[in-house]
Amino acid sequence: MSAYTIKKTILINSLAFVFVLLLELLSGWSSIDVYDSPSAFFIWQLSYTIMIMFVIWVNHYVLIPLFLDKKRYLIYALSLLLLIVIGTQFKAFGKDFSYTSKVFFFLIYTTGTGMAFFFLNRSITFQKVNAQKDKLQKEMELNYLKEQVNPHFLFNSLNSIYALSKSQSPETPDLVMQLSELMRYQLESAKKDMVSLREELDFIENYLLLEEKRLSERCNIELYISEYEREFHIAPMLLIPFVENAIKHGAQSTNSESYIYISTEIKETMFYASIINSKPETTIDLNRKGLGLENVKKRLLLLYPKMHSLQIENNRKEYKVSLSIDLSKSTKPIDL
Image 1 (cartoon, rainbow, N blue to C red):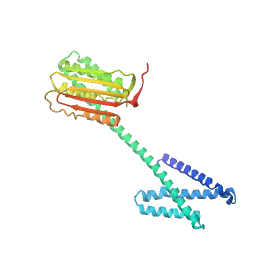
Image 2 (cartoon, one colour):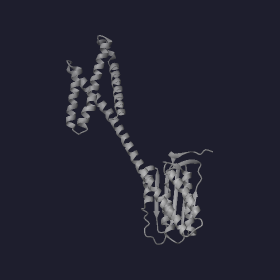
Image 3 (cartoon, one colour):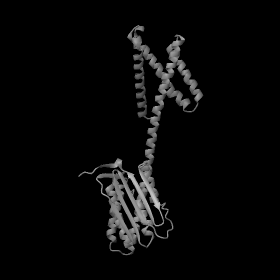
Image 4 (cartoon, one colour):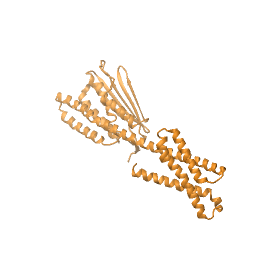
């Protein structure tokens, strides 16, 4: 048990003791004249409070850990009953049966109330601990998935440059510089949890320009980005795997005419993206179970649980990805 937990436990129990003492003083105030003096009345109520809290504390910190938590229910019930009887005798020793029974049932009530607060506090503590564990686990998974994007994207981009260099294209040096800018953004964004949606879409546009040079005229690439009036943020490198797969399994896998249509739109706080690519007539494997696509699916589940929708349509002539994400938690007015 940490020092913070110990201090918190002491504080809670001290406040509980003071609260019970105040209740006892207020409930017995009408009969203060029965006592020899106010101090005698206070001492009696204090002793009663000590007895009540003693029963509660022994139950919480001894009986529950030793018996109840270990599912030794019968021993726990008998031990708790014996504890209450001892407490009753302390308070009602020498009194009649009526008074003794009142004290007995009062102790059962206070012990039950104390147990309710005890298990409520325990439940809240467990929930916090589990939430922290889940958060840590998600952060570890996201970091792992994010790190995988670096070599995957670099591998695909270098393939594009390599294809151009083989044809001795005079544009190759410029494209190398363009790739370096893309990689700079990719490396910088990997350090962030969220990036500007505009920057992410600009990255997609520049990547498509790079691929358009390599694919020459045999692939028609169209990108539409709708205007929006607010600034949104999105997880970095979340869309690029869909674009890469459209190129890899569409235009790159055939020498015939092909197309890739990409559109994005914002409606209120919902972001919509559509990626459509043509499919070659003969294909070997179009199930698309590669690293990039599986990676982004996992990231969507972790980052936007119950806040996204991903639909994939795979027919004979084309492959379509429809993605929607609720960005309501990452929006603000754009400074003019």
